[in-house]
Length: 240
Length: 40
Image: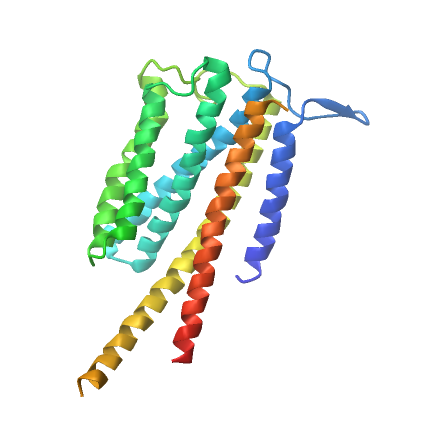
């Protein structure tokens, strides 16, 4: 297990570098091979933001789903490990959701002519982000012993927002582009390849960060328990 | 490179690096706490 972390770290770094090169490289012919991804005709190079924006959104959705499952497990069985998984996945999910909310307007400005519009997809994504930020704030600032329970309940409610965000472009007339897959549109196979490579790279990166965060939280709780034990053993001494 | 494209890619890595930096700082604080506990 100890060896797996650095190996996975190196593999993820290679994958992220490869994905970045593929996302930025226009089509070139080297020694008879064609590499790179074509530039979109109407949007130009700005469309390449999509290779980071969409995989970040998918990764955030997966992390919020993990948070939901872990919260259900915690509510059902009160297992501290499930609580740590829920906290970890929410925190890393918020990072990826922040990326979605930052890269989206940077893409929208040159394409739509505006940074932001109160469109259903954009607004629901912002609401989703706010729900999970409030979840993290609850966990950070509430000192009550009931915090994990309250947070798990909030996470279950927050998770309901995930399918709403995802399907909002099916249900409502929105300015946001139609789905890349499953929405009846078509995509150049080379673009799809780069998109999936970036998603794989981001998923591996998210997994590694979650793993680190999980270990950190576990040790943090052990240290807090040690402090609590220490103060309990010191209290009778001071009373003498 | 297009300015918007550069800004978006830079923002992604700045956000990731900032988050990783907070993790590193939390790790070092925890390490100090563990060493203090060991001394007692």
